[in-house]
Amino acid sequence: MTLRDRRALLLLVVALTACGDSPTDLTEELASIVAAAVGDAPIALVQSIDVELTAENAVEIEYWAAGTTRLRATSAEPAMVHAVSLHRLRPASVYDFVVTPVGPSGSRGASAAGQFSTDTLPAALSALEIQTTGEASFPLLMMEISLPSVTGVPVVIDTDGHVVWYRPGATQRTHGIAALPGVGFAINSIDLGVEIVTADNEVVASLTEAEAAARTGLGAFDIHHDVIRASETSILLLVQDTSTVDGTVWTGEAVWEWDFESDQLERRWSSFDFMSPATDIGPRSRPADWLHANSLSLGPRGNVLMSLFWTHEVISIAADYQSLEWRLGGAESSFTVLDGAMEAGQHTAVEVEPNRVLLFDNGLDRPGGELWSRASELLLDAVANTAEVVWEYRTDPVTYAPIVGSTRRLENGNTVISFGVADGALANFPDAGPLGVYEATPAGGTAWSASLEGVNLLYRSLPLVSLGGEAEVDP
Image (cartoon, rainbow, N blue to C red; front, side, top):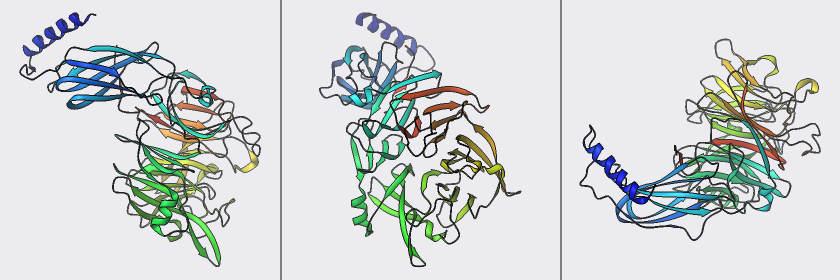
């Protein structure tokens, strides 16, 4: 369609709308495009389009490459100059784009078109091979991976198996990533502490362990294994906590909240206020690593679930942090756990509905020495004081991920499960593997799966709807 044809069609649509039940305000100033150009400094797999208009309008940009989904990015605040970031781009691809001004009532002005190309991936990521089967019900997956040549890097793939985002230069192992809608991501790593990063890879706030230790007066401030969103401007951190009990220094767990807008940092909870090394001991507990917490999640009552790997239990911390609602597994379990459901270590425990806990059952210490992992959902019966598995997902043949893994429940009821250890990746677990990600249905079937070659470990994965607010559109 030519530009003249587009203008003619626009006038026809405006006229028809004016005669209908929802008239368009024809007195508003609809902008024309003065210039629409590709930005000079594209970020890795992110492209900026600079747009200049004759009047203050919003802007929509649709963009696509051969074989990809057509996407739309919107700069909704009326202005004469816009810099619009385009996300979810595949590497080494040629993209077409169309820019359209949008007036206050939704009227659309004449469009301008252009093209740009994306760069190739760095060598370490280029070696990554992803094979997918089936059709996923979600578009994107954030993965915390370790490659043979790189200790760790956050990567987002689309569910066709293409890398569409990564953190440039981030070659440190990550310990938890949280999506922050409208902001970006909270990324926790061993080397850099916690960073609040936009989809454009801009760091807008950071908290290093050295800074936190100095501010709190603690000798050390070890942020480890998870960060989660607490509010629009704050996140919860898992932090190691120490105390002397009967003459021995024990390392337990604490929950801290960091408001990344105000930079306020506050401890909310400590394991030493509610648990004791004298009674709460697991098969792998030791003074230097008593509980080994590996995940946090928010529950339906504002409660906070914490997974304790070494004691094989999940605890629910009340919303006011003043009590424990219940304990699932371990020496002081609030429930009789049926069929050995909490005997083998677990990750990413979430109360997906009241009294229903979804987790990744690692199988690290499974009785009888059986080597398999699964996703499982437990029903907590407060009347009978029992907990039993009411749903599970295992691969066939079985997969064994003794130390990492994740489960994430989707809105449609499906579950995204990561078995995160590759064949031969761990010398002390020679039977571990293979590495893969699966979308499981409530009936236990597999809707989609991905196998990853060239990855040693996948700490955990997180399904995403978008990177920077981009939306899928019909052609």
